[in-house]
Each structure stands twice: as C-alpha cells, then as structure tokens.
Length: 413
Image 1: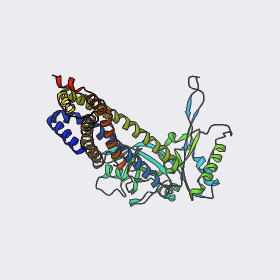
Image 2: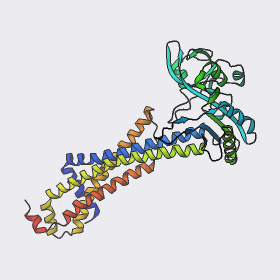
Image 3: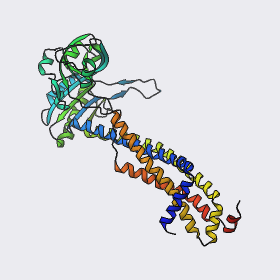
Image 4: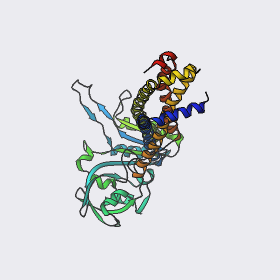
C-alpha cells in the first residue's frame, strides 16, 4: 500500500473523531509550545547578557571582594565578608603603568531619591571620570562626572535614562536639584539607555563623584577599620594579549596589600569579561536546559495520551483490521498504517505547538518583559521531538493491531 494511501486513511480516521483527535493533539501542542517558548526566552537572556558584557569592552578586568571563612561550618567559626579598599585602587594606580588604559573604583549603595512628589529607592554609585569610557556609556543630555567634580567634592549627579524619566517625566532634568538620602545634588547629565543585562539595569541608577559620596553621603557604611572601601575596581587593559599579565600583577599587588601569604586563599576575585561571560552563559544555558527538560515532561504526557487513544482506536477497528488481513493485508502493512496515523496525529500537534510557541515568544518580546530569540535549532528540536513521540508511542498500538489474528478479529463484537 502506498504511503499516500495510508496517509489518506489516517486523515479519514482522524476526521471521523475530530474532538478526540483535537484533545489528543492538545497534549503534544502544549508540550512543543512550551519547549519552543522556553528555549527562545533562554536564548534571548543569553544574548542580552552577552551583549551587555561585550558592550563594556572585551579588555576589562574586574576586581571584587571575595569571601573569607574563619572556620569550617558547625565549628563555631564565622564567615565574614572580605573588603576591597580605596587604598587598593590607589596602589594599582601607582603600580600598574604599562598595558593599562584606565583604573576605575566604584562604591554603590541603595538610597531614597526624591524630586518634588516623586521618590523611590535606587542604586547610587560613586564613580570617577574614567567610568563613562570604561563602561561605554553615552550621554543623552548634559555631561558626565569630571575630575574637577571629585577634586572639589561637587554635589552633582548623572541619572540613568529610566531614573530621569521616573523623576522628571518629560521635563529636562539638567540643572534641577534632587535629594539623595536628604543630600541635595544638581543633575549634570542623563545617560542614554543601555537596557537590562538580566542582572539589573544601568538605566535605573544615579552616579555621583566618588569623593563626594565618601564625604557627604555614604558615611560609615563605606568604611571598615577607618579605611574607605569600594565594591569594585575595573581595570581597562590596552590589548587582549596583556590581559593575563595584568591580571597576575593585580593579584600579586592586592595579595601583598592584604598581607596574604602565598598559601592563603584569596579574599578577592579578578575576573575578565570573557570569564564573566563564560560563567553567566553557562548559568543561563543550564537553566534553559532545565526548563526545557520540565517542558519535555508535558511532551511525555502527550505521548502517553496518543498511545492510549490509538489503543482505543485499535479496539474499535478490530473488525476492520480482520477484514484487511482476510483480503491479504500483511503485518507490515497494518503496522505501517497505524504508525502513520499516530505520527500524523503527533506531527499536526507539533506544528500547531510550534506556531503557538513562536507566538508566545514574540508576545514576550513585544511586551518588553523578557526578550526572546527564536532560532531554527529550537524549532527543529521541537519538531523532531514531536516526530519521535509519535513513533515511540505509536509502535505498541500499531504492533498490537498488526499481530491480531484475522479469525479472532472478524469474530470480535
């Protein structure tokens, strides 16, 4: 029997029980749609993180505080946060001369920011002039923090695009005065939007001169043992080839500054952009696979539903199978007929599921909540899964139909 004829028989059988076929396909459709949507969202998150990190430049090293444990868990020892000091930045600035374009210290904390009747909590970051270029920020209006602002401890602020919109709406913020934790600052500039990286957004931020922050805003929270602390030190390296050398120099200098022996565990971290990108990409890919596996469970449930319905179909069509065998149909022909019927059911559900999944992914992107990237790989994977489900769960009902004895089948009531 030709494939086309078997396919026509399968379509007639499905049309004879439209509601049952539709409900059976629903399980496959939901499973495939979930796989496509989740993979698209996962790919979108990975692309966003990659774009955000790469926008800061490939030759950027980030020094951040680590964790130092005073004793093993349960032994009475405590786990204390280590610190990175402003003096560490000054040491690097004095010592790192070759292959370094800029060294930027930052201290960040969350404060209540007010203008008129508008107020909300936002991340306030103390920075130096080099922060703008190192992190590839562009000004939408006004200017960024200057060396003079830090030297004179000026009360000026630069706003992220979203912060400016939330505080001022359509008004021009330049020259206006805002309150940060009760301290007055004049708005000197507004940054262009860079969007979210998935781990926060620079659009929801306020930047002030670092020295102003230490002396007029941050207070005791920015000191430890009477020494000013920083959250991060960014080091812009001139060439990619010099990254490892500069990283080793930073580790040596800060290890010595923190009085750590060669055998002591580091209480700070030195990460390159590629290290950070690799780590974050690995995390998002793992989450995507995990979510895809959860979505696969619904595909499995849909496959079991197909097998149950096909077993019912075999029972209902026992006499038909007996007649086909009586007129010369072979086991392989009966097996092929029911297998094509099962695969057709599964593939129709899969195609509808792909369309639904693409629609959901596009809806997420349009809404602006989560960006998604629809790839041919995710669609092909979902289609392959639908085909595999149809074959795997269709084999048993098709085999059962093929092995029916003609005489028994003809006598079946």
